[in-house]
Length: 346
Image (tube, rainbow, N blue to C red; front, side, top):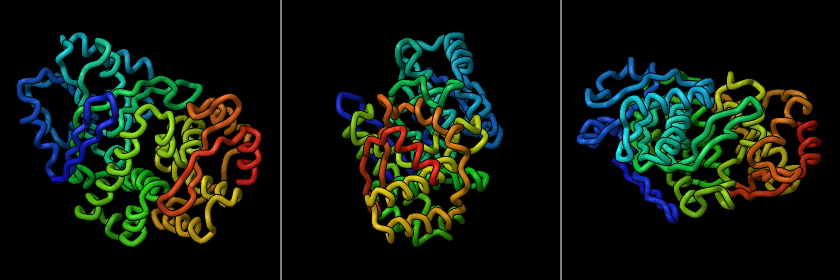
């Protein structure tokens, strides 16, 4: 097993365990705890052995439709009905949407109880389970209502990816590519060189991709938990990605939208002379190798309202993440009129 610790200032640390069979530890580690488990219904059907008789288990249908204030209220009321107290534990088992709404409910219930994350998708394993961002959506945009509530433990078991649909694997890999382009040249190298092994889900390679992705994220989160500075770098590809996702009403997986956003970010970076063309081309080739095409965009009129309401938008501008090299990036404020022109060209 690989163990990481994410230690943001003034917050309790997050212990991350990565390795085959990591979820088997839950039965032991939850002994004596009052556990409310929010579980992806399809995962519960596939792995009933993970559910413990002492837990209160609520099955949920994963997907963006779960991330609403109405669904959060239903979960919170189930927690209250279960008699969960301040010493209780919310355990989220599933992908990113389960983790997002579960983490938010843990942050809100009794003004905050402990949360553990057990991610079961590539997306959640390489990104969303760690860092403490929790949120639900509004019709006006994605992740507009949320809280920062880091989990105290995260259990990452790569064997849970064996039955994951290919589109969900590629969605998660897009987030790993984002980490490689923006933060970690070594991770980018693994994804570039070992494409066949990653797609084949070879355990050793997948574990390395997860480990390096989470290590890069932990380093950023430790320096900036609440996204006042360096943590904005984790939004590479997300300005356009979130707009595409909101416009599609969640019907397109998050990572596929981010991948298109990465293509756009590379275009913007080249147009501003922030990145060498040869580096940008390497990044594009990796995206294409994993099936992430540079597809045609919806109209600017459709996209811009969602970009303008994005949580990264401020006073007529957006904190836009520019890749500046392999494993390097910076944040630059772009005016909405600049983005309009760039979107029209992209």
